[in-house]
Length: 117
Image: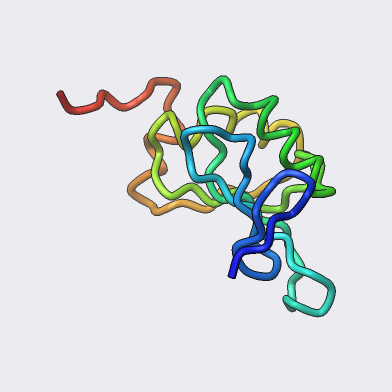
């Protein structure tokens, strides 16, 4: 059962928040509660459109996490609606990027993938 977090996201399961301010993309923050995870690392799953950086920062801050606090950013795939502010987030903090090895060339490129059709 989801529990609405009054700050910036719906808590899907304990510690996992859907970031409501990042519109049009399913972005999530894993922020384990004390004692919930051995590592206790905060992980962002996808970060939205190139223009959603402010909305993303607002959601993270509302949950008590500054963008520079992220330890890892997991990218489901390298399309621009999932990795828009990725470079800025990495520059701002020390987040490790987690992605499939086939996505690495796209994430390292300065050009977006051409979408079919």
